[in-house]
Amino acid sequence: MNGMLKAGQILEAESLGKVTVEELFGSGGQGEVYRVSTERGDRAVKWYYPQLADGRQRQILDGLIDRGWADDRFLWPKAIVVDPRNPQAGFGYLMDIRPDRFQDLPALFRRLPSVSAVTPRALVTAALHTVEAYFTLHSKGIAYRDINWGNIFFDPSTGDVLVCDNDNAVVDGEFAAVAGTMNFMAPELVRGDGGAQPGTQTDLHSLAVLLFMLLMNDHPLHGARLLRIHSLDEHAMRRLYGTDPLFVFDPSDTSNRPDPAEQQTVLTLWNLLPANLRALFTTAFTKGLAHPGDRVRETQWQSALSEVLDGITCCTGCGQQIMTSSDGSALDCWACARQLRLPPRMEIAISRGASRPRRRSIRLDPQARVYAHHLEGDTERHDFSKIVGEVTEHPTKPGRFGLTNRSGNVWTVRRDDGSVQDVAPGRTVALRPGLLVEFGGGAEAEVRP
Image (tube, rainbow, N blue to C red):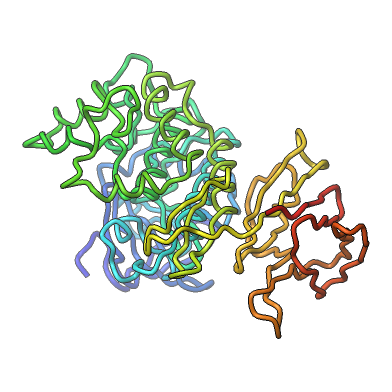
């Protein structure tokens, strides 16, 4: 093990006791990460390079640890770690180990086998979870300051996310040594505008870049201009991301459009993206590039991504997942070119628990589910473990589907002929246009073609 720490070395975590170094996991721009053993099981330690282990970083860590962040989407610092025999050797911090099921985004971009089976549903879910995770920080007045593809890990099968490298997050407005990663930084930070500092407002730009890369597999400013750059040195990067940024799909300037021969993937994916997401990306990388106040907020991303997720359906010809448009317009399957046969949709109206009445629309695909968050007005975090209803196929009549009550409450349903029926937990009601469902708690729905 070639690193700053040695296998078997004994460290001490403040208030948590002895820590034994086991192996080097890897290294990054600020330090090295090790697997360590403690009385409570294996954990990880990030140990800073000597030049970065200063008083300011120690102060930031103390503040983060004192907050006692209990959100399972973050590998949050738990304790300062030092070498008790050599206190001047520097320091690090203790955190939980990233589970093996989480993969990094570069693996997705390189199409490694570990993420080769990822579905559109999992990608949109990961994007939604990412937005909600950073919104949690921002709502507490904390700026992450270095949102980039190296700090988010995701589960390719579920879309769950894990935010790492949280040791640079500080209260918005406070100084931090890290300003960001160049190709994710807001233009005003890249240019070094007077008074510009990394904070929640610049995080919004970085978040939009991350979402674009997650869904489009490319950078929003990497079009034809990038291909004309012979050497992507610091001067070229400052122009590309700071002094002269131009969105690849800018509606009024086509000079940076992706090259059809060299950048076909992003062109194809953009055409497959639902209109609501294309509109938000266009806002983020046109108005948002020049005016920080016009950047897309997390709640806007959350609403759009949730809508797209609820509209995903499978092609009956080849089984591929398709992101459909909310207006129900006809689409062709991107994989087999057949015209999609869109399933009926459930229009849910929520009158309680919202700042204003809310409506949600779910495509009743054979894999569709109604979750608890569908029946809530304002949702801070989508929880896909709380299933309220599930589309199920009739056991003896293939091709006929119903909605099975997976909640603990009795539903009341009204058919288009006026008949009324109670649907107890575990029971199923046939899905037909005109069906009205009262879930309780101020949420009701209608099935429409």
